[in-house]
Length: 203
Image (cartoon, rainbow, N blue to C red; front, top):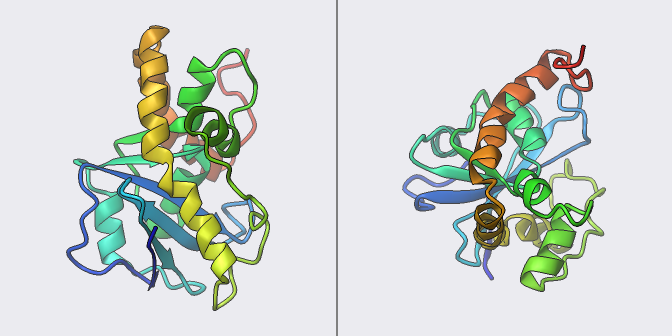
């Protein structure tokens, strides 16, 4: 595994192929308050690229080009959060996309455990260490443990997608899953516009 840290943007010419695993780290879970600190990416090749941002410094044309490329599928876990914070801070709407949490919820109906850690454990036999989840992602120099944690959040998403797609197809829910996933950018916009919890479909 190789982890490469980039300050402010990806280098020009870096290719991730037809699909890229994406995750983010922020100062908290409120996208309107807590700034975006890091975007992690992987081509599914066992390597990870981390793009670190200073406060207010989001001029990253190469990263924005990748995330806005309609020919590249962006794979997330719990895409609702990441798509929202990317739109808020980078001004990019991620399409097309895939969400392993949505896929898991619709295919693994025998459990209510759909965290990335649980998925990696059951489907891939991989144990993730989540100790750095609540660490300070805004500090100027990330620790090696933070880098490894951030990388692990994207290194396994391609493998999970492959496993979950088989399960979705087996249960006849592939089209339903894709329809729900396609709605995520709209759900993210509702979050940013002030409707994070209200069910707008309720009576």
